Image (tube, rainbow, N blue to C red; front, side, top):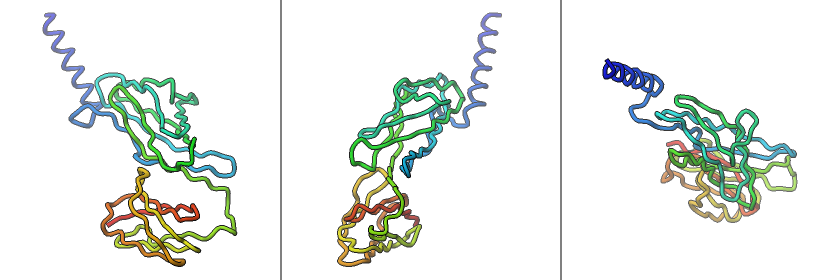
Length: 207
C-alpha cells in the first residue's frame, strides 16, 4: 500500500510540473533580450524584465549587475539587485529595471545571476536633455533597412556602427553631409550609428 501511495504521489507531481511547463525540458525564460534606457529632463526611465521559472525547484536570483553601470531591479518596490530573491516553481516575476552608466559607456550587458545560470540582456543608454539647435541633425533612412541605410547630418566625419551588444561592427568616413552604408551583409537585428559629434541613432535591419 505504501509503494502504491508513493507511485500515485510521483505521478501527481509529474502531472503538475508538466501542466505548468509548456516545454519538454526544464528552463528559465527571461525577456526581453534588449533594453533601451534613457535619461530625460532629470527623470530616469526604465524597462521591465520578466522571469518565468519552468524548473522543478524554486529559482534563486542571486543578484543583478552590469559592468560600468549602476543597476536597480525593483520587485514590489524592493531593489533585489544585490539582495536577490526566489521565484517559485511555475511563477513569473516582473522586475522594474533601471540602469545608468558609471563611465562614459552607453552600451552594456545586464547580467541576471541565478542558480540556473547567468542570463544576459543587452543595454543601450541614451541621455536626452531636449533639442539643441546648435547640434547637427543626424538621421537615418529607411527604417527598417534592408540592403543599405542612408545617414544624413552636418559634418558627419567618422561614423561607427555598433550592434546591440555594444560591439563595433565597422567605421565609415563621410566627406560631407550624407553617407550610404551597405547593410546587406548584416544579420537582422538592432544596430546603432554614432557620428564623430557623438550623436547616436538606432536603426533596425530586416532582410
